[in-house]
Length: 267
Image 1 (cartoon, helix red, strand yellow):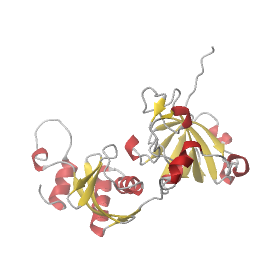
Image 2 (cartoon, one colour):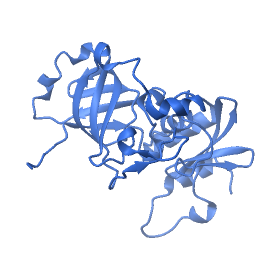
Image 3 (cartoon, helix red, strand yellow):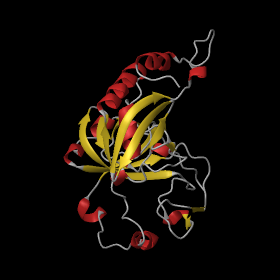
Image 4 (cartoon, rainbow, N blue to C red):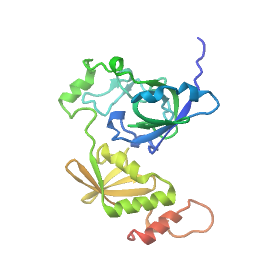
């Protein structure tokens, strides 16, 4: 058998940095934005001609952060145990290829600005095709085991939660973003829109009457009122003992020290 060789045509850039932050499907992303940056020197600027007339595009990409594959997986929507991986959208596949339909907002040179992104930052992109509604959308198609699950659970994708930011939390997030270049507010909003319930893989835990979400080494404290999530406060993920100034090398904690001095109560 002749070997197949695939090379990326570009890379996806988004605020989604880890697998636990990624939505399960593009329609569950609550408008997360991103960019597809095509590689120069390949005449791709000519390949993009006429694409700006399409509202949605298919993006074929590589699940580059997966190691190995699983013949049976447990999808989040399954109520009857594991499923064969070919009957799911799981990234754990023999060839970890992904396919997402995203909204195309505009094209600037070799950069495609897109919305409803469910791909992680740095994802290799292999191909782009226009989404053709009359042939790509088969509304009456059977939905397999998901239809069975939907009879006992909310529809898929689950309706996104509304995420509201208190003024103090928004100001704190803006300070962190300016100091660290971490898109903290966008990442917190994207994660909590998927659901605020405690989950070890999404780094959500209960803390008294509220909850905390971990994004890298920062914490977002929030409360839940029905289908609305209120982000109350941003905190450093380091406790006092870890934030003592130290000599020599090691992790640069200056942003956390400054944040604690200006914003956060001692713990």
